Image 1 (cartoon, one colour):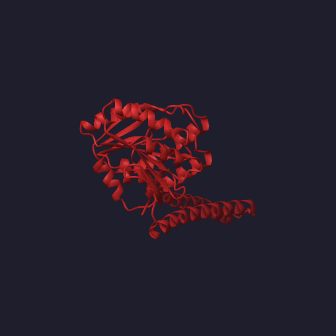
Image 2 (cartoon, helix red, strand yellow; image 1 turned 120 degrees about the vertical axis):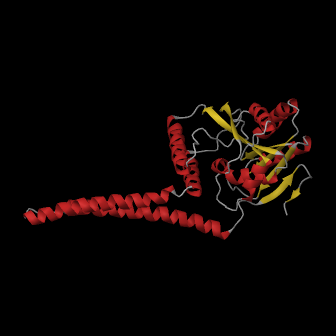
Image 3 (cartoon, helix red, strand yellow; image 1 turned 90 degrees about the vertical axis):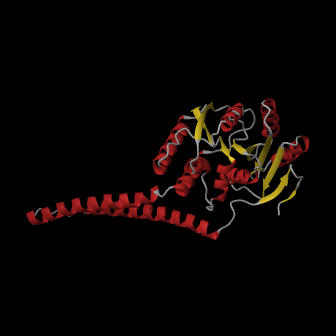
Length: 311
């Protein structure tokens, strides 16, 4: 059986559309499937739509969070609840083309354990959004040593890969990078990002920046090395100015140099504050990890075995 995990946040209009379209495509391809919608604490009627669809369609399963925990948590909740022999993760807004799921499934039948959805293009985006996305993927690719330039959350995972991801103990997770990191036999399917048919994007510039910072910190220690680089730069500047000052003193042409002193103090002070900020951020992430709180809390489940409270 194929499980399709669809993280959903304020997607009341897309739930019935996704259910119908995926049902036609997977049913037409003679693929046994379940649609696992994970409601990430939506503020609209997303959960009611999931409940309604689960009553009308036996393939629909709904998971409801007690509050908003974020997309990463929603994806991992879906992986833990999925019963399929393989699992596809995709966006509920159908910007990931559902037709490609059949291609992914056929490749899985051929023995591939991870089928990556690779973007041919990013669709219609602002110049700033494209620049920010390219910058983020460039940084994360260098930090992890893996080319993630065209990567996305749209991918198929074999059951053994899903079990491996579920067994990872860390709280702060980055699904896109972890699915690269675990390895296994991989192949790719190219796709074009589709336009939304209903609703609007939930990603603001602020949320994208937060997403980028969180995931870089959760998967890489590269920002910590920036502290060392800034320390080396400060040392070089200090040595250069120290040599200049000594030479001027010996030659008897030393100047008061008030402006230079102020600039050096500002430079060193800025480096120190940035360094403390980076170290403090990592300490906060460590603090979150050692508390051992769950990634998410499930309050309700509907479909499959009936509806009820999560114990």
